[in-house]
Length: 300
Image (cartoon, rainbow, N blue to C red; front, side, top):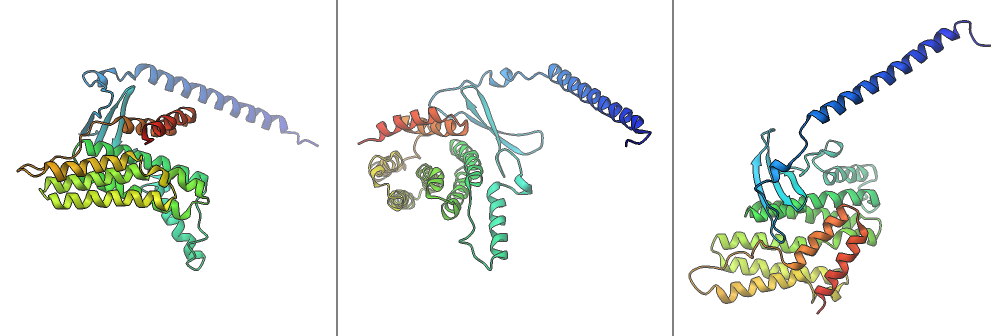
């Protein structure tokens, strides 16, 4: 049997619901009004900074938060990132990155499992987060390379190498690991370019040669370890480093040492960049098309 004052409670509940509806309607109107009064057009940022296909246009500045920012000009706009920390400025679960968060998760797992690391694994969601995050760092070290800040290229590239090794060790399947490892050759090449460029800036030709030869060896070892020797001879990364090595060995006989390789993208590098962008957008049909074109270009 319902209490005598049920009607009063129902009236109060209806009043509360009505108030909530009015509140949400008002806040929605306020948000819409703010958006309408804000100037969301970024054309003024693009004017005078034209996009040049095959070239990286990058600039660095200090933001309103007093932190250094980097902007990369894209065909349809601008990509902006922080120069330090996670490029998008987010702190997943209070950590600097998802990588740091998963390192702590692994350590906690080992602590509660008598130091057993083998039973710790990364599933699809964890690997996907680490991959997306690594792509952010990839964009940033490409920008740093364009800005000739080779020490920061090395910082971000080595960070991604650690992530790749972490995924390879703990991914719950080889297929899941390969979704990340397939980008290791480009990463090794960029790390080698940065280290070699620093050596050339110090007029240390022998050190530059040693670095480049080491990078080529690392690439060949990668293809062997992952049983992908079929990709070795057509590797654009190996070819790029071998060409640079030959230039240093043959053209560096005079007073001036050869400079680092041009920052202008090769056709293969453009396609590899397009492939990464397609994966970010989850446009897998486009990614498959780009992979086919890359395979044909890299074929002997």
